[in-house]
Length: 184
Length: 243
Image (cartoon, rainbow over all chains, first blue to last red; front, side):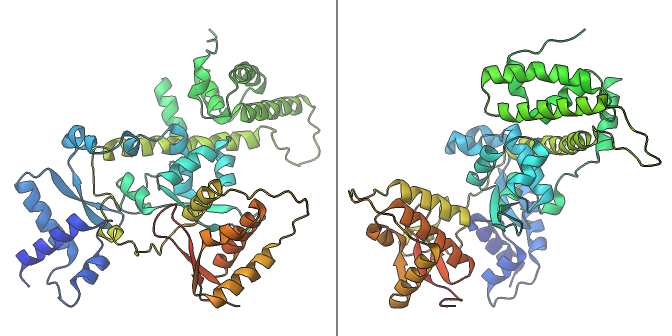
């Protein structure tokens, strides 16, 4: 199979895929046709092509796969396609809850509230409704509380490739010494 | 100079820990050596405002106020030097909570930055255009527990209890309903949750049956399918059916 044809196939898959296109899914779509290049190399070629011809989109590596995303400068136009609530920014409470879940998953609501020192019911509900979190089973402890973890949509939302790419949870000494620096 | 707390200020805080961190930073206090008397006084001023505002988190603030006062009281007790035994500082637990919360609060800031960077980029939204949805018989195999709960809440809202006037103690147990569902699924390969609703005489039975479904789902005795959110739940036999 020619490289050009392969590039076009991948382009078609990127347009149609409902979630980031992974190497595994790519191979499954190819069926018996043996691709001469691995997905990441084809992506690289396409990416170079897009940037050379100055397209309004590019390929983003996210959640272990690839997807087409629009460039930031078109935001003001593109956002007209969606309802306002779809792209509302998360509240501080929701962000804190999300941070706790992402570093300590799977966690129960109690674990979250013990750290935040405040009821986190409504932020959990918001995050579940927006599909950034999902319920994955129950705790073995008394009460068998629900366990929460982050979803693929969470990775997409924050542009992360995997949970390993989370911003580093800093040691408190570092944060405190920075606070001191601010005061001086 | 002391800055007096302001009405609006309170809504800035995510909870009592957030407020304490603010007070520590504002007054340049040492988090490892918190002057409990001073911070309790400042904290209480804010709590009184919280009560006034009837914030939904007021309870959390009151609880923290009580904790602070307890620590303050214990600090006043004379320390009995009892040999070499190390006496724990009554502030330790609170200090650890504050330090831990501070880390996640900071991480929340990092997520907020990521959000700001990613927000302008739009991508294909799963399900926004799904050719399979055109096909009414298509079935989502991968329903999440949360979706099932949402659906149940939705169905229950539309469920009207038939008006009856007899007074009797209803006795229904989960294991009875597990048996009942088992029986139905032995006779039929699948059944709709809504068709079950029609034959029940009370909300209690509906709820107990739903719990039975969750229990059977957990034991993989049954499978639950749904074509879309809030749609009817379709029950069928699972891998462990009958065990």
